[in-house]
Length: 431
Image (cartoon, rainbow, N blue to C red; front, side):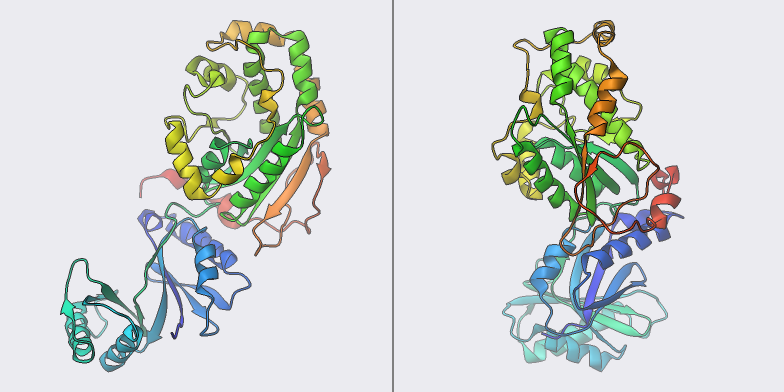
């Protein structure tokens, strides 16, 4: 089938007010990145939609689908044919589009973007529908038809298509700022990270492990999960932080019941320090209220108190089955359930505190050299710059801080997208 390109629609992006050009620009950039290496030209902005011109007819639509489903901000996309704003040409192209398709009911849905275009929408509906009936006898059905022929008329051209594929919705990844996600090898945290991506955040990730006390299995899972998340924003930076020595000092010097809360407070401090490299505005965790001992309301309050940044918990009101369903839909579930040895399973007390009191936590930490313990862990961390298969990794710019070991060597840093810098608190302003 002939294909002149792709037409892409967005929904929530269109509701933005004076910031709308930034959102559309970021969405166009993300689409261009997702299609890199495929036979398409530059993304063009049309009225209320985007268009990408195809450079050959025999497109690998399976690959196109696999990539575009990772682009947050799209409501739908369709392979289209483009023709002149001539009613006879529109009829001919509509007939060519439906050749070889089986259907018993159909409808034509035309839309004229500007009122000064030559043909009213209802006129095109009737004329094209009558023409198709002459060649393919069927029943017209306005709701729930087997086949729907779309015709979008814009200055200079009409765009016709039949197949309409659902997009990922949400906001373009990277438009809402940057966050640091505490990424375990479990089910919850990758889902939390994905929800933040869908709300327009660019995610960085920190994974805490207890190697050599435990195996590298959790690190391997974290890398695989981060690679999956990278597809939704092009690339991701993952930090692997050794946590076993720090845990051992907590076990030696702090009350057993408070160990888990103290682990989490140190994780928050370390992740916040790494987040500062990239001007991340918040931390993200996969915590769900009451799911485990460390996630009671009292303990979450005690953990929050250690953070210099806001902590976002997108799954706070979800139950486990809802999170599992999202993980399966996201495609991370099978990786998350692989057996591993998570650092939180090391030195776990028999009876962890479920209602930690601020004064008890503060007293317990007086026996710990907080600055030294955090610094030691940061000095020994590893960094992985991971990318979608169609993206060349690049190192985000950041000020000088303790770097740890860079495991992958990306090319020299490129300037980050202007949208990440220009969009500010105004992003959430009413349209």
